[in-house]
Image (cartoon, rainbow, N blue to C red; front, side):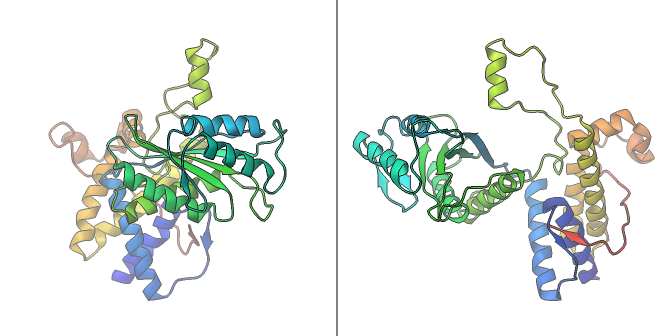
Length: 329
């Protein structure tokens, strides 16, 4: 029975947390047990609402003029210490000018102005109140894992309300390869950063908004600035309501339903306790709230009768049975 529960958790947990990487053959029991433990950990972190990591692309310079300007900004003209890919920590204007020259002349020469981006600017952060030193340790680990073979410089900002790390990565690697940063890469970066934070004892999670049933729409930085300047004629919607997003949310909730059913049927007490937490978490997601508001007939009869008296009642969702499907990661 335990192996069957583990198999269901891995099957639907991989669909939920790791979409895109398909596994077509069953895993041996030892690996299955370890994988199920990972899925339980991801579920537990999410339902207890572990803070979500932030890995944001803030831009990238087309030429050394723009790259140098960004380096001056993140280092406050050399007043803040900056750490490079070799682990060397320096500060001061002379050290900053030396770094700019290294980037300009090492590898392919970077002119003052280029037609394509020659650097990628990232911001790594968690919630306000996070230990700044641990955040930097996790950011250092993240950069070494994700940008091995690339030149980069990182700076910790802790003078603001929320500590964060600025990371500037040279687009061309030491071997001459261009850096890839599509949506799949950004998703992996968030997961890697969350993993490194957890390794340093910081509670963190990295999940897609549809997995959390979060429907709030956040404007990109350029749109916020344009709106402040009065240049935006069309107001962005407050919530995500596109067909693609709605479908992804529905698929995620289907996976959650199968996970919930498996946990409820488990012989393990901790699984059944986790099932209660999952049900409460799902009931409180904006997606499910909106769904039940628009279609109250989907709420179980007993839940409708006790909605006001028992706000924490577990939401029951009928799982969608899909026999022998391949696993996704």
